[in-house]
Structure formats: structure tokens, C-alpha cells
Length: 268
Image (cartoon, rainbow, N blue to C red; front, side):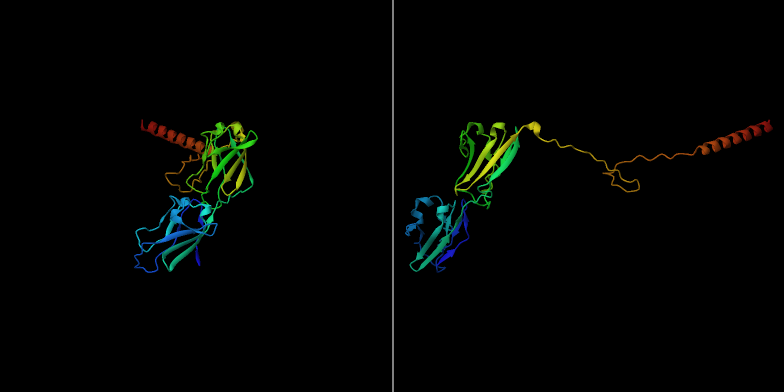
């Protein structure tokens, strides 16, 4: 009976487990084989399609014969068997998931402004999945021509690149220094025969809406305590003095002046 493994993703790696039945075994002969479409077991280490992609997971352990396959491809899926002793055979059923595009067979509307950059969003449903093949094309002269990874149109040369190459399943394309000639239809195509259509509209820079900036000043009530680093000093309101106060003060000083004058006259 074959062991069921978690599905692997194209472009990723997977380990097919295999170990000797006896922990102290020193057996040096073993084999890994793959069941091909003709129902024949083919030695993995002799098949060219695995060249540079297969290695023992722990070659320093005489009892661990697990197989590491890197850069998985869709045709890697199927049945494998590991033989370490005449009566010790381990089977494994490997399944490989290809890229399923998020907007498969749909048309996505995108707009940008001349002189700026724009991103055409395209991604696998599983961001860990790296398609075996990806191609971006642009419709011109009544047919789609490749612009990534091979820039076959002079007008797009050195202006296109993957937006996030560090994420395997993110296939979005960035086009810089937009011109009105970039307007039109694009395709994101992967090896699983899935694709997404894009209709790009390029607007003139002067059509870009202007965003007004409004500055608001908040006044704190005078009775609130504010932090010294953030407070705004408010002017102290002036108190209005009633006119009769000035009249009374005038009368008071007049009486005082008369009394002082009379006192000096008596003294002389």
C-alpha cells in the first residue's frame, strides 16, 4: 500500500520517506523507482528528467534512504517505491498541484497614467506554487506577442518586470514609464493552460484628480491643562472696564489735590 503524501507545489520540493526496517542496518544497496505511463518501474537515479533535481535527503545516515525531489513538475506526480532489502519495500503516491489562476479566463480592467507605472495583477490561488512556465503577451498587429520573459516588442523593452519575484505564485507584471501606446489588451498565461485577460487604459497625467488638503486647527478650552510639548498658547481675553470707574477715580484724585493745597496754605 502506498503512503499518501501532502500535495507538492510546482517549483517547490518534496521528501519521499524511506528507511531500513532495522535501525542498526548497514545495508548499502537500495533503489528508488518511478512507475511510468507504461506501468514499468524506472530507476529514478537513471532517468534524465530528474537530473540535478534528486538527492538523498540524509545521505550520511545508512538507514535513512528518503528521497528529496526539488523544482517539482507536474509530470513528477505518480507512484514511487523504495527498496532497501528484499522484503523491505516502501511505496509513496506523490501528487503535484499546478498553478490555478485567481481570475482564470476573466478580463480584468486596469487603468494608469502616462509617465507613471501600473501593475497588472495575476497570481496563483496558492502563493507557494511556482508555475513551470509563465508568459505575458500584448495584443498588437492583430496577434498576441510576448513581452515577458522574452521582450519581443521593442516598445516594451526594459520597461516590464515581475512586480514581486520573491513570491513564487505572484505573477503580476509591472509596466513603467507608461505611454498611451501601452493601452490595449494583455494576457497572463501559465503552463497549466490557464490565462487571464487584461484591458489597460492609459490616461493623460493632467486627467489625474487633484486631492485638496484642508488644515484644521483645534482650539483647546482655556480651563483645560495641556502638555507643554503640544499645547498652543491662547491669548488672554481683555476685560472691559466700565466708564464710571474712571469718573470716580478722577473725583477722588481731585478731592485729594484740593485737600493737599489747603493744608499747604494753612501752613504758610
